[in-house]
Amino acid sequence: MALPRVGGAPGYVVRRLLQAVPVILAIVALNFLLLHLAPGDAAQVLAGEAGSASPEYMAQLRERFGLDQPLWLSLLVYMKNVLSLDLGFSFRHNMPVLDLILQRLGPTILLMGVTLVLSVGAGMALGLLAASRVDGWLDTFISILALISYATPLFWIGLMLIVVFSIKLDWLPTSGMETVAAFHEGWARVADIARHLVLPAVTLSLFYMALYARLMRAAVLEQAGMDYVATARAKGLSETRITLTHVLRNAILPVITMAGVQMGALLGGSIVVETVFAWPGLGLLAYQSLFARDLNLLMGIFFLSASLVVVANLAVDLLYTVLDPRIQAA
Amino acid sequence: MIDVARRFLRSRSAMLGLSILSVVIVVAAAAPVVFPGSPFRRVDQPLLPPFGAYLFGTDVLGRDVAAGIAHGARTSLMIGVLATAVAVAVGTVVGGVAGFYGGRPDDVLMRMTEFFQTIPTFLFAILLVAILTPSTKSIVIAIAVVSWPAVARLVRGEFLAMRGREFVVACVCLGMSDRRVIFRHILPNCLSPIVVTGSLIVATAILVESALSFLGLGDPNTMSWGFMIGAGRTFLRTAWWLCTVPGVAILLTVVAINLLGEGLNDTLNPRLRNR
Image (cartoon, rainbow over all chains, first blue to last red; front, side, top):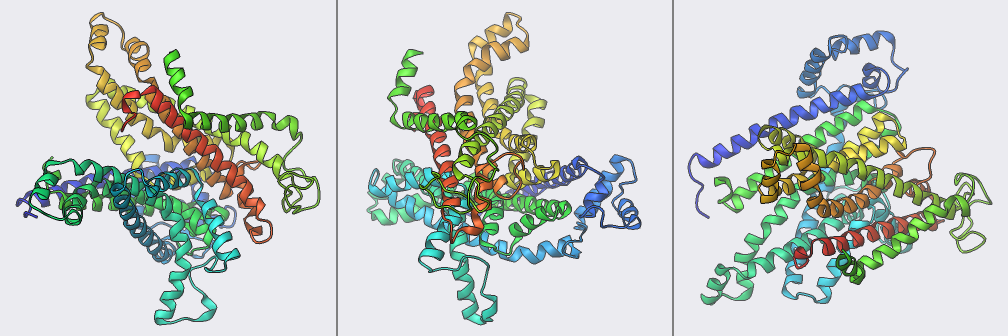
């Protein structure tokens, strides 16, 4: 790979970073709007369970979040608070929203990371295999898998996997992240968590795996007719070498684009999947906050998730320029 | 037109989708007749297995699961169609204005569309329903809010492509009003991709609705498939049918709509068939 032109790459990075700023601001403004859409007083929403907070506390909240000010001023105060990561306090959990979210972030990142690797890795492998034998049984199988997994609610796939692999076969645990009572340590603990991780990760990755397989298949078939492939073949390279070092690198681009889109969907999917498998991450926290009517906590989760997606999209764009240096010129 | 209809009838997957969907529609329409009264009503002992006195058995409160499925079909179809109608209307207006006028309105509207595509949509839908308090109306609004950007982008692209075409330029030269050019001349030419996208949005809307009601955000007064799965989840070990039956209902309905959408795509845009 040639080195990027001096000035080009950093300039692009800075430009993309600057583009992300208004998006984050808009997310905060959206949260503020939602706060005011909620029935009742915005301070009540911030206080969590309405009625439990004392009038003094409510007055204090109003002042701190600028709710006693005119709307535009109150928006500015709200923005300042959120951007300095002051997301308020959750009475239900009796701790600041930010601490609560950070505490639950780990399991969710673990689940999402494994899902991303699994769906991209397995999807690409399946796509390559399908492209090597077009219209074979694998090809048909992938198409059917894609159609079914697209049409099935995630939570239902999860429940059915529990019925088969946990209840009937008794191979894997039904819920949780680890067997707490067993006090596993070191590698035993890692193995225990891995066993708990299998079903949620498979549930969450199934659809995107099928999607990547189809994208990969189409891209590989498209690239196979290109001149550079003919050149490589004329040079006497083996077919495996052509596929792995030349075609793969070009065919991977649509998959990477989709992976950026998948981030947002993963966060949404993790809510139902974590609920089904009682995986102690952000998704389960969101579900619990629904029950407790802790809207402020839910908004905090939304803000951080949306920011995470913006960052992920940024990362995907940068990865793109590394993989295909022609992109940043455009 | 007859040619299009014939091509549609010849497509096997589209016909399969159409027949499954027709069954779902008939079940939904017949629900109040076949299963009169509230589907929340207790009819017999709890947890009776399926294929006995009741086709799909009873749930933990002794409610007839088959009645729930039939009434749930009404909910799913109604919310799917309503949310899609709103999303398509909003998306068409936004995309149409952006594509027809270009320039500054295009910039602003497309930034907004991209923004709505960036935020995690399902989480946003949950937040909206939670804040507006769960009801059929708030679910429809939430699903429409997360679905319109796809339509807007599609319509904008179509309008951009049409904007420079000779018949449009001719209309403008004739002194026609913008409104007339948009609604009488450009829009009818973009209908087929809008119909195809719309059918796929109905499928997604049904999935989102089931997930919302699974999480307990459904309208508390209407029966829905997601709610049934959520309520039956605790009895997965003892009463498998409580979760399985509504899940299969969702799967069949959504597959049927997808097949139908693909069939429509093949017949309305024959040039794209070999993609």
